[in-house]
Length: 289
Image (tube, rainbow, N blue to C red):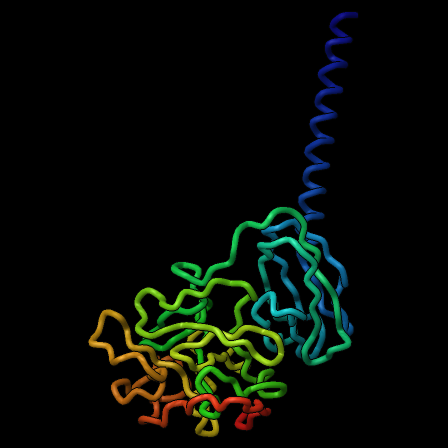
């Protein structure tokens, strides 16, 4: 009788352990699924997602047309046009409610609710820098996408909005971020400007920085020289005989070639530097895209 009771206890314990493992697996699967948002039928699903601080949310475009994941407040760098079957991800490091929309189809709205304690202030410095140097001193984003400057911009002022900004997404940083003025290995000064749409754009030697929506992978440089007003940024390396910091050296006469992976074969000769900002000037939608 005692043996039967002992056996029953062991069986009960084993069943409880199995149930606990199954419950934990279910919870893990649920949590993993909850970090994904599907873009389908011109809607974000779910429209409201609650996640803990530190969660990386991934949006997948299941529609047959392009969409964007654009923060209403500039809380993250804009996704730019997301092609069908492509994804965009962002890690939430601060608690709060983050509303967002599709820039191409503004009626598409949703929000992410982040709970918990902040993991710290976002900083653009050291390994967290949003830019780095690629082959031939080409300036690229942290994910390797080519960066460009716009000849119609003035120093510290962007002229690229609306349709222009859809094709040439500004390189933005989250509001409240502390942006380091220098990045290891790169000569030049980094800063930010406040755009009229409420976002904060990164600059290099006062020139606003952009990516190109038709660059699909690191090494692409499909925007080089378009309309004679868009130029890839070539920054002098700190380990070389660098030129004095000034307008980004995308137009530097000392650099004559671009990475082999690029579609363009050479960097153009010297172009005029960006004109100084005009007080009270109104930015207009740019051409050349």
